[in-house]
Image (cartoon, rainbow, N blue to C red; front, side, top):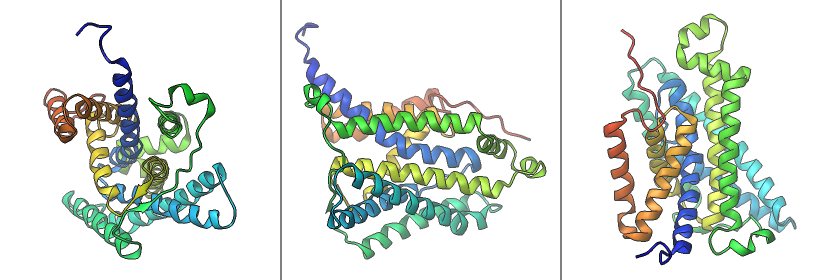
Length: 307
């Protein structure tokens, strides 16, 4: 096949789809990587926070529709309420499931995280429904995108833009603000941070809150794209997002985004050119390959153990 005979439109369609899927993983992976960067904890309940954010947005959008709201106003209000609820869940999760185990062996908070994930799944299943629910498309079509709408649509552009803005915002927060300095100090040495007056418990709670807000944003945008949700959407998204965080270098914010994009593009190209049945095989195969040669991930740095 010559260069000119190559189906570039199909390739661009797969490429755009991979970027969007990768951005979805990246939005959730940012929460994983922030928590791990501070306290070296894998918060397996993070995917369920994303799922709860989507359910809250669905309920809020239904109420607002009844009262005559429409369009972007529903999206903004539903997203705000979802972020508030997700932040409250993240804060409560840290206080109840993780803070009491702060000094326990590392396996204990991991088991607690898995338990909270199962609890939240079943809580939503029993309080809502085990069936898929239709989620309204809250993002309007942009007129200027009509020429390329067959490759990438308005919802997908918003997801991509949100991921980029979020990464830049978090990078600025951590590197140039007082809160960010407190986070970095807590990450480097929690005991010393406390000695110089940093409230490490408050910093950790704030990290969970920020990560939960990002998960809620992702839940609203992704549900608006897929137009359906159920109580299990957080599990698979959480597994893929955790994979993306490890792939990019867990604890590294740009690495989480890069890992998500690489994972999304790998799945999209594998599904498009080989078979959709093998997209997970190629995605996790890539993870194994990269971690074999770069155990710290694409942008991660090897950490020296203190003795």
